[in-house]
Image 1 (cartoon, chains in turn red, yellow):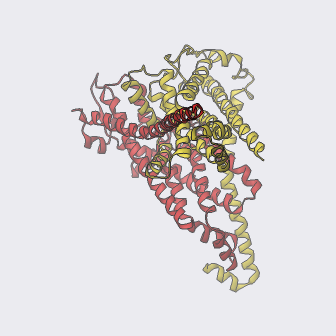
Image 2 (image 1 turned 90 degrees about the vertical axis):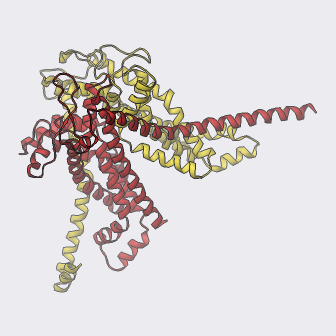
Image 3 (image 1 turned 30 degrees about the horizontal axis):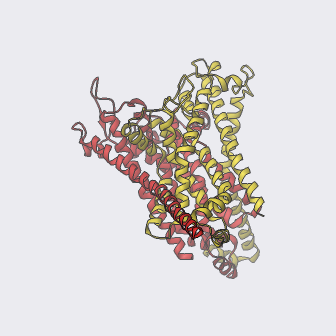
Length: 316
Length: 306
């Protein structure tokens, strides 16, 4: 009698512990979803405050060609046109992409198709280090070592310039391209390679005409993710590219590349440093910029994920 | 293709030579591309090390010395120190470990040990992948809006900094914890259930002890990543230079990368090539140590398994 009762009590307690622990772990998992919701809600809410300000016009923000978020005191001159910032982001993203996409893909082909296991086990972690260096350190490298070097070899670069910023951003996103592309290349079944060899193809032919095309959706996915990372990159471009909003001009592209410019992210950092207190339109403009940045990177990330899934379906 | 055929039909040997050359050039080119970024970083690291220790400039002693590590910031380059940001970074990490990491590990446990593979689980999983791709500066805005303006905490304090950067690295903690849990063989769980243990008892006594080294490894890697974050801290209003060492959760804080950001804009060359270089080398050294710890931990427990 009494033993049965003890067992019952124990299992009752156990059941309660079971329910409680499960609830706690579920709450943790739910909290991670709350972070995303929190990001979306805060960005929307404070961006709405920004656009609701009578001194701010939505179309001026989206299509205005001048970014001058000074506090509305003093001479009261201000302008919240984000196109120059978008230009700065675009220039640095394209230039860093020009560096990272071919390099990263080449590295992926080498690691997946050519490298021996031993070489791979050294090069792969070494490449990952490139993504592990803090971006402020990259910014410092660009400003203090790369810009003077560019000047010595004949580039007419200013102290702050988009080119050296793009170089370091390009280097830091190489691992993103190489590791995801390598996964895609390795997931191509060996049957395809063997078939190509059987037809008399060399390794070069097999790699470029069979394996790479077969892994194309995964490779594109890595490209998109890397570009998304470049768009969101903050400290390296703030330090190395400077703080001069500059509109993209096809006739004057040299200036966009060799002179100081400001990206969306750098503008946010600069406003945050100047307007810590809050309440001004400039302060709320950070959230509008943040919303643009989030929308851009989110779209690219989702697109990349979609492409990656397609690849997985093809070969699994 | 067409050039190949023409080459082949002309003479067999010249075609083969061309192909062999092309093979070699292609492989060489790939190798160069693979190594290029690494080589560039190596050169830059060599430069900054030379600057930090004044190896080519005997006029000054090494910029990294005991005084640098124990002094507060100063306008005079030779007296500028890194103590406040070092302690600040440590405080931020401590907040992350206690306030944010348990949530990430708990979420990983739910996904791996409790949840069935349904819509909600998939949603959470996709959400984590997306969080990992959100720019760090946006996390700064989140911290600013929620902790500072929403909850009314003072801007730029230890607590807010730790929470904000913690949210940023949460996906890293979570994904590595999931991998660690997944690597625990199912047979161990079945054995535990077979002994009459409950789900929680199995988790507490069998799964977690086994997965702990992997979880810790991921946590240390997340901390190493967090220690280099700058932008989110600027967004929450952290000062780039403070003149006191924080002693509590509500003290204003600066971190190593923030101090580097502050110093880099000083005009004197002693700052640019001396003090900042010393800061960079210190920060990288700390990160290196943390990564080495993580690798050591992983290797040690992996070899135990075998």
